[in-house]
Length: 135
Image 1 (cartoon, rainbow, N blue to C red):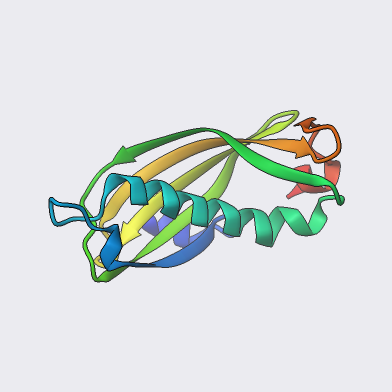
Image 2 (image 1 turned 180 degrees about the vertical axis):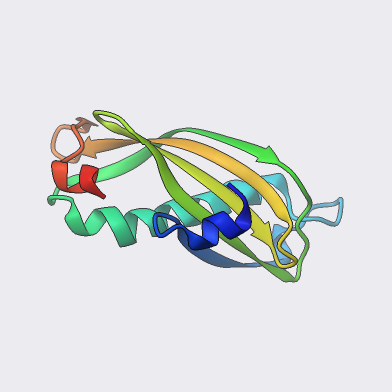
């Protein structure tokens, strides 16, 4: 999705993070490992604002797969806005798509992740409750 489409879509949750000096590497740009942290920040924000409020107690999410396609460098100092949305809902898993944008609106990366709903008591995958599925 293009940035304008993401901004207009109410299914998309935006998260803004501040880049830290320690996020840089020897090449003078934000290290690739930081991108996964930015993706996590966006996923957690989506889950906390949209899914956790409708989930029954005793359930949580774990990430089982994360792919990141690096598009552009990010630099300190700066901020990153991450668009996060659900792209697929399965029986026990959710697919999350993301787009990371630098301060100048450059698309820095895209990401896709798969998260599984877990039952805290059994530590096993659990079906996604209907209320969360409706989201």
